[in-house]
Image (cartoon, rainbow, N blue to C red; front, side):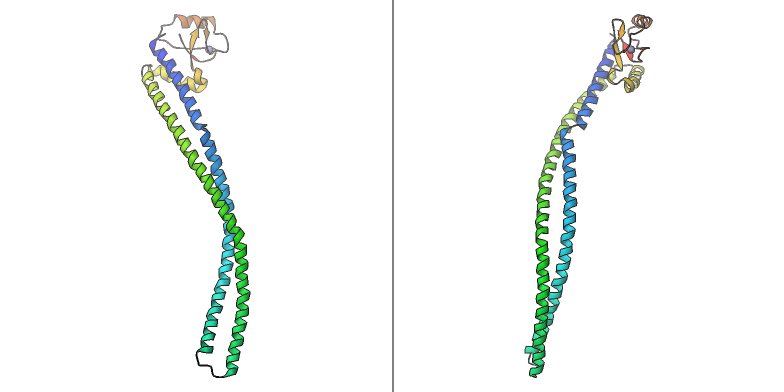
Length: 238
Ligand SMILES: [Zn+2]
């Protein structure tokens, strides 16, 4: 066989290897695993955000009650100041203030109960949020591991791809440009068997028998001339 055809067959083999490597790269198990873990994390984040919204609502109500308690306490301080500041002289006036203090304290107690209610509502929500955080942390760790595995596997494949690509370009340089162009066109159609070797009286890739005249023509042609099989269209070298 002519040396340039031998190189062309090598180019074809290397192209097949490159296609396999590209497939292997896209099917690295860690890639799938990473996508699954990312989806899992997104789901956890979504659920956590819902609970967080509930928790925030509870906190807002609690804050409102606490603010009210603070207002009542300020009021009490003011009344106590008046009561014990020495400005009150009439017992009647003092009694009125005492009653007011008692009334405010009752109201304050009611509001404080409401604060406690909200704190009780917050407790299971906080527990859920903690649980989501710890779940997310575990999944994050898995993502980190899968990312490292994926990067490692990709680097290994990329190194191989680089070596094969270099080898291919060295060999392709020995193939006449028109032959290489014809091969590349045929490759789109026939994939890994774009160029085949004439074997006996048949094109190796031909689903049907090669016509005798065609075989004869191919056999008699100069060694550096390439044929297209009239039956299947593949490029034939001998
Ligand atoms: Zn054929």
